Length: 416
Image (tube, rainbow, N blue to C red; front, side):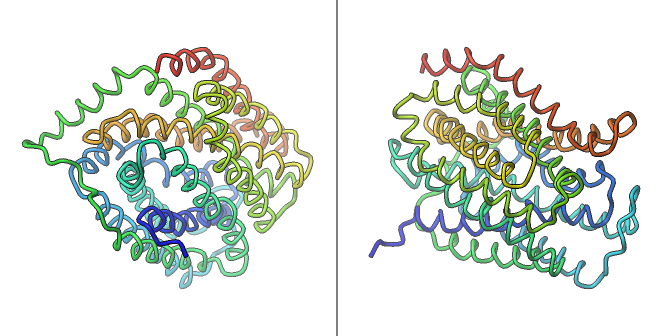
């Protein structure tokens, strides 16, 4: 019988938190769509979850390089669990009014949920940065691709396979229940991470100077051309990908005439591709090399976005999402392992946070642009056509990104 090693315990905890994240993939934006039909206001809810990545990534990096990373993870999961419990309590006690086409029927409730979403997003910044810096302390250097691949596969089972479908079914039955379930999932993760044994605190610094520590991280990233290139590409990829993802909600509801359950099942189908990618990633990297793997993974994105735009029904869309998630995870296998291997542990938290500020800070921009582009397009196009505008912009944008980054990726990995 296999022992419950620190890595397995860590992966199990990530499974619970990502199950909660998977439930949240559907329920936050879907809840917003139950309070308003305004595309821009609906997009604001996931913006609340992602905006902290831009605002707090650098402070999170400094904190991660100062404190015990295990304790930081536990604290942030407690905060996230409490915030989800707060939303569940609000929804269980305040009945929802019919959603107006413009504006909000219950601005007070929308604002309260929005603030709690910001709390969840802020805690996630600190938690995820600390978690990603812990992996080198759990496995040997040569095992990073395999360990990360297994971690992402388990995360995808929760976040993309089980979570979205579960969240969709639950919110369709009781709007408050998926938020209560998430609170319980975070408590399980707290129990698992609290029991981890090992050294998870970075070496103590003789002096503590926030400004100097941030400058040290920025200087390292500035002197690492490939790392900087990966951050820029990932940032713009996230911008276009999240334009597409938030655009899917209204497109599925109004153009494809599907409900929350069908939407969740399509996202779950996409997760199957990601899970396969998590296991196949290390083998693809070994066969093709990291540079060629990164190039091919990036080049698959325009095909995926165009497929989402042209998919005539839920079945085709599910297959496209499987393809999309597969290559997204393969890209992460290359980029994350490179960061963990290349950045010294003493500054890993800061450099990783600056990297993720560039990469993840673009997400709220993409989310806002998705809703804004639909709003503007409605002035000139029929609503059904306007709802596809985020897919068109995403396809064009990601194609330009591939053309710009292709040769630089190859040269960068060849040098390393």
